[in-house]
Each structure stands twice: as C-alpha cells, then as structure tokens.
Image (cartoon, rainbow over the protein chains, first blue to last red):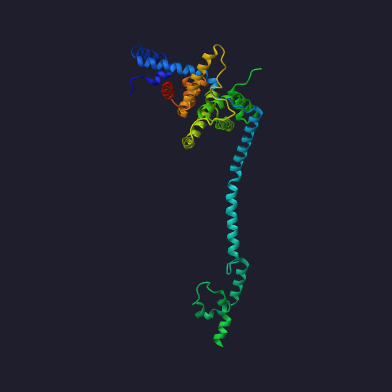
Length: 164
Length: 192
C-alpha cells in the first residue's frame, strides 16, 4: 500500500470526502509535507480546469433543425433495419431453401429413368400384363434389381428369339 | 407552466412519444456533445456518438426505471459508447495519432477561452496556462478524461461520477488521482 493516500487526496481536492475520512486525512496532512503539496497542486489544477471548462470543448455548431433532421433520419434507418432484421432476414433463408429444393426436384424429375408418378404407374401396369412371362425366370434372375426395365419390357421378344 | 422533468419525458419516450424525445434531445444535446468530445477529442466522432446515444435512448427508454436520475442513466450510456468506441479504434489512433484532428474552420482551445475582462495581459497569460492544462488533458486515457469531464465540466460529485462510470467511488477517485498526477507531471515538464 502506498505511504501517501493519493486517491483520497484527489477526493479531498474534489471536495468529496466523508467527514470521517477527511479527519483521518487531515491528521496525515499535518505530518506530511509531500501530501500537502500534492493536495495544493490538485486543487490548483481542478480550479483552473473548472474555471475554463466552458470553453474547453467546442460547441456543436449544427443548427437544431438540421441536427433534428439528421437524428430523425438515423432513427428511421434504424427502425427500417430492425424491421428488416425481424421480418425479412428469415425470408431469404427460407426462400433459398425452397428454391434449392424446387430446383433439385426439377432436375431429378428431368433425369432419364427418374421415377415419375404417372409414368411409373403405366410401367407397372405394362409389367403386370406381362407377368406370365416370368417363366423366363433364368433371364430375370440375372438382372440387377431395376437394372433394365427395357429388358423386362421386352422379355416376350427375348422369349421369341430364344424360341426362334 | 411547469416544464416536465427529464424522468417524466423519458417515460413518455418509452411509450413512443417522439415530441418528448425531441425535448430531451434539445435539452441535452450540447452537454452530450461536450462530454463525448472531452473523451474522444474529435468533433465528428463526438457528434456521431452523441447522436448514437440519443438513438439508444429512444430504443431503450422503456427500460429506464427511474431508480437513478435520468442524466446519470443517459450519461452512463454515452460514456460507455465513447469508451467502447475508443477501445475498438485504439489501433487507428495509435497509428494516425490521438487527439483532435484540428480543422481550419474550428477555433483553437486558446481561442475558445473567455475574453479578458480586467487586466488583458494577465487574462491572456492565465488563458494560456489553462489552455496548456486542457491540452495536456489530451494525453490522458479516455477513462481519466471521462472522469475529469464529468467532475469538472459537468460538475458531478465523485459519487455521481462513479455512478455514470459504473464503478465504485474509490475507483473513480483513483482515476481522478491518476489524471491529476499525469497532468501535474505534463505541466511541470512543459514549465522546464
């Protein structure tokens, strides 16, 4: 701890010490010339600063109507930004996700062999009509699952070829 | 007619009353600018951040509970903004130099001192001394400048300074002591 109560001296110079603390400091000052000098200098500095504080900082020279207009514009921009943040910021995310999903669906549907609802049903009906051809089982069992619908579709011809 | 108190106006601002906001701004804008300038030492930054403090006031007025005085609450907001700004832009000031960027159309600190009334020669000498002290204050830390400005310019007691700074009164006194000690050293150096 410092031998000199520096912070208390600043408080004393500022006129802001409680009575008990002031008494303790007075007792110290009676025996400490260095602290008396410091206190005197602090008081002089504060007095000089206080006497001229009004001129120390420039005034804001912006006329009130312009200042008010500037502040209003900033407030409006802030409100618009917070409205945007609250309501619109989630929209681009959701819209992007929806657009990506739609694009993926379109691309997938356009791929050859992609299962299209209606087409798949027609294929299924066609295959069902040819179920009796399943007696060509040795050929079918060599096919990978869904590997080649064309082969299955033309099993009758295959059968004819074999038979022929 | 009795003027509404700052606290009453702030309550109305909390309800979205823009007319009450205008009155508060007009009442406090010069003090807010002066305080911001004392910490930042830059006219443009002081205007920008004092306006920012008013915008925050508008946005958060509803949270003002009236436990503290309006001025303590508002100046705490402003001082925090200025100190945060200075912390974030410290590198800039270190590289390009701290302190006010003097503008040609702006009167110097010496010019801003009150005109001499009694003995012109003595008054000029005194104004020079004081201008030198204030210029030395530019070399203090932003916290030290804030404490000095609040106590000396805004005439707040040290307990009020502590409330604005959001610290204990003992800490505010330490800031004041360091500011005064640094000023004393700077002024002594210039006297040599």
